[in-house]
Image (cartoon, rainbow, N blue to C red):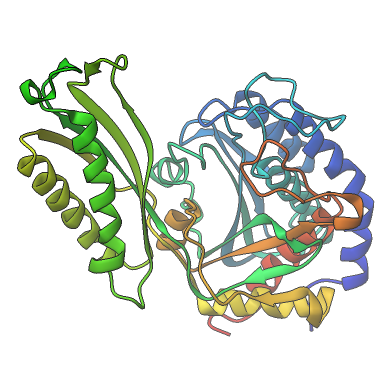
Length: 405
């Protein structure tokens, strides 16, 4: 027997949808970058208190944690949403477009936040504010997913403690899938995201006399070319990795040989052993190329978000809930992981987790036609109905099933 009424769940999701859309648009109009989400966090905390939850603020910076306590002992499941925006000038032309120059919710975090607030109200209503709930539900509103990363600071501040969390769920909108589709995958879901800053150090001089200088631009060009062999010749054909030099800066004018060039790269991988090998391969190539061309180098290499691994049982639970609520056609089994990164991975490294995608594309309405991080990114807000239903039902199903069942 299900621990919730499907009819009541649908009724609540339908009834709340206009309110949740208004919340999403409020967040969209007032985007805030990572660790600057003061207004958003304040709105979130006020809403959760109105729902009747216990609320903690300033968790890991600007994070917010809400707790719905059940009246029966049991496990605790956490539901997570990210709150931060991107430094992008919006070009959607929507009536609810960003009112902050140079900042935009171009990745759907406004929708994630609104969706989880609606989920909190639904769960509170379904359980009589915890009165018919076995265990507890924690709501994690996380800052800085786009950087510098808010999950790890929240964990350090005890977001997964008191009561200890046993499992975690998160979702992300996906403009490649039709509105209401739920995309799941067991195992590796997203890549580890590391970065390198490489300074190629030559010797400046006059552009007319290159023999009397060490041209750092020429050396840097060779470094970029050589780095392309890392993936093609040093990573196994059945493994996945990416080395992208996304930024180069150096030089003063056309007749001056630049004394130094700075390059910035992102490095993506799925497996820990590949991740470790990439760093040594990159440094060896940079060292070899610069040394052979009479230049020097300095490299700062930072390990960022780890790869995200979904728990098989949690993925199965979300899949069953999706089929029951939305039908077989709504569930999409992803075959390949994404080389994008997601700091939900820190939560999923601590407890079993499932990170799934919510389709928000509607070609007839012209919504969801642009990818995330695009200045024209938008979504079909009616998808939030399905996000709330799957989140709420998955949480209740997890709490009311036998451990390991």
